[in-house]
Length: 249
Image 1 (cartoon, rainbow, N blue to C red):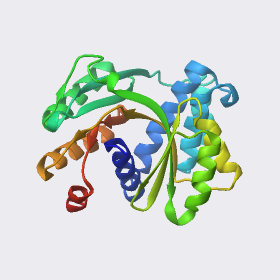
Image 2: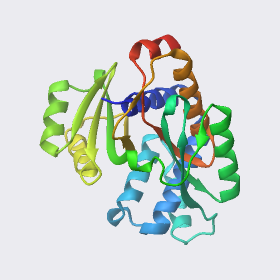
Image 3: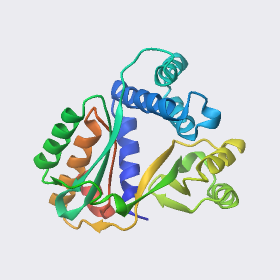
């Protein structure tokens, strides 16, 4: 499929390998709080909160942490107020980069993200300069060893998924935003265990990266953004061939 899918896979494997549980929990708690703040504390009527809770459970976040974050977001407990901003720009090779920010200090976040872009060969752009290149989609990732390809395809198509992509040891199912929960529930009802289920941003087109140096710069930029406390998610529209990814691994 696209560079997005490869990045999702890299991010997933990196997250599984790295011991960054505290940072992951912090970002998940912020997402739960903001989701509850804007859509209410009942996940039944708040799809965004439902997705945030699912992500937290996937990372084995304790139930008490989840409930406390919901109450803080809904105003039942005192807590920090976060605002959401998107920062956009370009990375090495002309790659479009979109960073979703959730912060309690807009000035700090802008300074940190601008520094990351500059340090890794990119540049910040104006609001809206690249956002139009991305569409919000659902992504459900399975380990090949844990599911039957035939059953996966059957359930995905019957439930209304848009695409199934095969990469290395994983399958990635892509859905529309509206059908994400229905497709995810269809897999769950069949007892099919996924590695990752999230709402993500998928690029409409990709920029091919054909040399190792540029590929390494792009990956370092994305790593730095993901590691920034104020960045919830970072997306880019690159497409790096497997042979270059394998050489950099």
